Amino acid sequence: MLSAASSHGLRRRSGPRMASSPAPVIARPMPITRLPVPCRLRRNLASRPGCRAPSVSSLRSRKGSRRLGRSREIASPTCATRRRGNQGMAAILPDAPARLRAVSHPVVPTFDGQAIRDAVPMADLLDAIDAAFRDVAAGRDRSPMRIRLEMGHGDLLLMPGLRAGGRGAAVKLVTVMPGNADRGLPTVQAVVVWFDAGSGEPLAILDGTTVTAMRTGAASGVATRLLARIDASVLALFGCGAQAAWQVRAVMAARPIRELRVYARNEGRRVAFAERMGEELGSEVRVAPAGSPAEALRGAEIVCCATTSSEPLFEAGQVEPGAHVNGIGAFRLGMVEIPPALFGRAGLVAVDAREASLAEAGDLVAALRSGDLGEDGYLELGSVDPRWAETRDPQAITIFKSVGLAIQDLAAAELIADRLLDPQARDRREGA
Image 1 (spheres, rainbow, N blue to C red):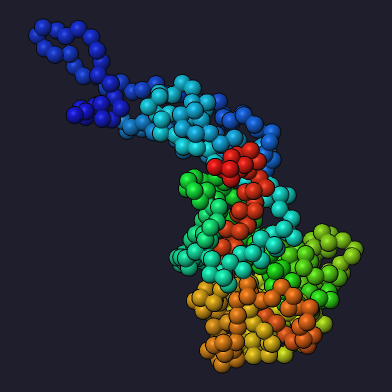
Image 2 (image 1 turned 180 degrees about the vertical axis):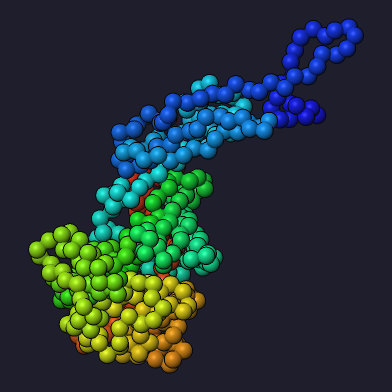
């Protein structure tokens, strides 16, 4: 059995014993290895733009214990090669004791928002999210309902994603803080980890805020592609937060938008957002802030709602016949963007998943309770025929109500990882 001293990583001092008494046991701290700051892995650094390389803090001695400091992420224009076990840590800490280096873990590449945006065009993401909706409708989605924990000023969500026969799994941790807009912070912040399905190995860490915004936009883009009139060209957008721009980009990937009206309760924000989108979209798209919901909806053929509102954003009668409405902001009961009466006017109502919608879609549940929507009055988006919009009634109102699914994060993470991870490593995994 180890002595108290050896069990704490201390050494007995060797030497000749005196005849009269045994030599004392002296606790001597282990050498502290200090690193250059910052310390970065240097192999294959030029191959992964947008990735973050780890630096490792020095070994620390505190209260008789020795701990290897956790690695910290520092912004880097490059991506570090993943390394395993002692080999990776030995490269970082060549002078560290072997028994400490043995507890190291693989270095997992971390990709920031810019790398993700550059690697995945919206049109490609629409196809990936469309396939995810088809998996839901066909019963191939193995993801559980997300776990929601109330925080002081918002919600913490845990969303594991898995589908039958998939090559990987994704787990997202996301916070939704409605009050962040007043502090100049994103309402939604998240991180996504992509795992190999065969080995369980973490392969990539993704900026979940970007993944969430892009895949949520893509969900509206898929719904617009399936349900909106083919010639729809006027978009009304409610909300100007982090989700808003991606709603516009995704809808534009599905329909030939020529005019965008923006409405938000805060005049300064809607004007600023309209200016930014006008610069991004160029002269081919007329972008203007709307002074009221009615002004935004007048003549609009597509409507996107991306807010955290607890009351309807507009009146049901203000929506034009033939319009398509995407509602993505109300993700729990008690939140309402779309007025219940509009569900009663709609010719087709689609949701991302029935079970999740009944548990979390505040505006859809409100319409069910008011009797404006029947129990059989809606279907899952993945069950809609891809050519339905070509023969739709031009006067029919359609609604897509989304609460967001883990399989959407899974589909996005898989596409992103395929584009950003080392191609040779990916080929080896697929050939195994």
